[in-house]
Length: 199
Image (cartoon, rainbow, N blue to C red):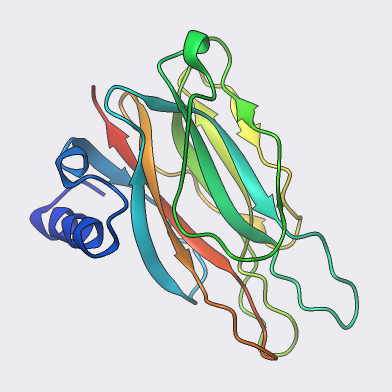
């Protein structure tokens, strides 16, 4: 999905209302990549961007383990991007949009050498008319050298098609998260989109 005036306005509104990502840096992104199989629940949260000149070279996931019967599974709850300028400055900046409340963060997975994350695929469980919905379960990324990295998420659902690729690398993200529902079925993270920067 190429950047349009509506998309840029939405990001600027989020930055103004939530105060998370600097509006001047939001204008620097070149395009947005997404997938078509995201879960249907929740709302889009604020965007978070790597610092100027940094790109995502690694990621980590917040994942809730299986809860068994009669527990309520939420699976994937959050995604972090680890921003760097290459191998020498890894793990200097970590950014994340909204996350669900359940689970623990994994250790980061890194692109080889000076590579950056350029594309992704999301593993999503289709909605269940009866039973426990989990929505997004896992994510995998493709690096600029073609290496594929798969998160340590759960195996429910299927990976969808790969997104389009960023010309240079990802530099930010925005998540779609369902808020806790008390005694009702929770799904936490449902969908995600990533921002591509060119410099």
